[in-house]
Image (cartoon, rainbow, N blue to C red):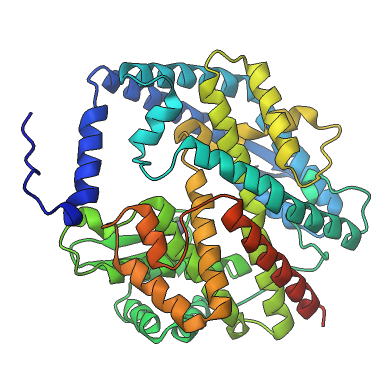
Length: 470
Ligand SMILES: [Zn+2]
């Protein structure tokens, strides 16, 4: 086969050629019908999940809608709503297991067809993970267990004391840790927009101007309306090279962070506007989320735009502890899949045994007693495991990048933001380690990075806890 890229500039086209070559090497005609079969099973998963509703206090709710009751101050309401949702899910546990067994078999076959020993190695290549291996993921799992889990256990311990309960149950983790009413950052979408405009301007003048341009050009669709599609995301209008932000704000603390997050994605788009190659106008997920998650961290310094000093500290505490709290779950979801695809002959029972072991290893000390069956099947609610195998650790890798940007900004704000901005300008032109390096962060997910990060996070969380109560 002739290589049409033989004469291209090596540095400039390294990433593009690597990706194209990869696609060609992995292609197998016999994997097309298998992909179709898996897509059908994915649709079946969505159908089962989508049909799940419960009746609570005389009204019918979908399971995502039920989430709101887990934030209620009343423990009985939390317990009852959790129980209803959990029982509903368990009704279909066997269906999920059968569905997953089929997917596992097909995925293993696909890997074999492409001359791989197992689906793990095949999927790493399919995702274009050239810059890290399964061993790096194992190092991430170990580092999370050693450095993050002690911190999340401490926070659960504090919650137990503050809420004056005997043990923290699965329905006690989403409500405010001191039993307060939710924060109310704004009344109207306009307030959200101009509040964030102010924050972006304080982070960096140029970024503030970019956001102003989005306001002027009507590139924001933020309020929740009847009939509007759910979710929040940033998308780019490729033809005019402008970003667009879509979300459903309802006036809660989370909305502020969603807009900061999507703003980070939008700034990434502005930064690559001059890139002629479409493939280079976006970076891999592991870095794309650094752009957005860093903006949450940097913007969080100016939350007084929305809140009193005490409430701003409370919001920052929730945000930071939430970011940390997700890392053990990412480690569980990732470890679990490494086990699944290296034990292709597993039974459903063995699979749940392994999941339970991981929940113990990375758990924060939540008391599941009496709900062992729910615990064993908890993984079935994570759609990525069914539909996007191995696509999850990206969030953890990106969070480590964002935390490093935040860590840099605590030392020297100006240079941290300059580095952040210059990393965005690279788009997808360079491999991941170089994108991280440009942001003044290291592409490493081991103890070396996580240990000092968690020391800083722990210090900050303690500081916020005091500020909030002062
Ligand atoms: Zn994002």
